[in-house]
Image 1 (spheres, one colour):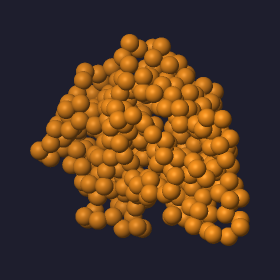
Image 2 (cartoon, rainbow, N blue to C red; image 1 turned 120 degrees about the horizontal axis):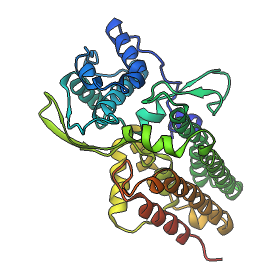
Image 3 (spheres, rainbow, N blue to C red; image 1 turned 135 degrees about the vertical axis):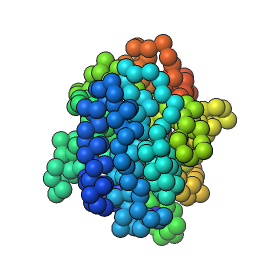
Amino acid sequence: MHDCFTSRGFLPCTDPDAQLTLGKEFERLDRLGNALPSLLLEDDCRTFLAQQPIPNWPGDTISPESLPQARLYYLRLGFIASGYINQVHQPKCHTLPRNIAQPLVKIARLLGREPMLSYDGYALYNWKRFDTDKPIELGNIDTLQNFVHLYDEHWFILIHVEIEAIAARILKGIEQWSNAFNCSDSSREARLQSAMDDISLAIMAITKVLLRIPEKMSDQLYFSTFRPYIGHFDDVIYEDTDSVMSFRGETGAQSSIMPVLLAFLKIPHQQTRLLKHLQDMRNYMPAEHRLYIERTEQLPDPKPLTPPELFNEILEGIAQFREVHYHWAIKYIARRSNDQQGTGGTPYLKWLKFLIDETRHYKHNL
């Protein structure tokens, strides 16, 4: 298991770069990103964005040293592309101009991902710490890029960042469980249980953070002002790439936390459109996260090796996390729209309920 995953979860191994330092033309891209919330308020925003000179990523590779820059470059382009296509109070748009499309397609190919703003660009790479000696947590973090001039959007993104930071404890627990499983001494059973205890506590901790969403995020503002910008792309022409593309919008289902827990705990789900959708969400994750999930799937089943009460506690923790998510989906989306499609283009309420029920169904019968 990678040390970075057990210390930082699925967040980058080092804090994200906050500025592009590849040359003057890239500094212009930073300025364009910073101005985006104001530009999106203007009726001629699309015309303006289509005229901006956007530099291509230099070269045809990404070195480990340049990876933070590549992620920030992708983040800026992803926000600009989604802002262009999904601009609020403007007609539907199905063409991404070449000055945005070409560099976005190139950097996406080099990063091994779809050319679309996904959860990694919206949350995983989109934060900075005020004090780098203090934890990655609410109160010490802010966003690098936004669609709107509202702290509500900052809060929405930063909630996810703290959840991802806490999730490092889940990945550390999985590694400790794996190491204990491969150990044959007398401490094996105690170490297995200790690892599962840590995982359970971490799940409870991320649920507490998720419960904080209403503190600084209005349901009205979320639905009408910045949720539209993370919507999916339907038959969008990427100019000069000979491609018409459709992509899922940014969604928490593109986070790797729950997929890793499902892979580790072997929670079964019925072979439905939901399962196919969850599998498709992996295509929007960074390649190293997909590989981590696949490796976790190969670990032995922990259910027979965990005290039934503890195993059930973990499943209940996951179910409660999903119930909070379900509650917020009703509050922030369903009550304000007859459209029962999520930003990932799915019947989200129905599917969330399936996940909750199937998780609880996998408990031990005590």
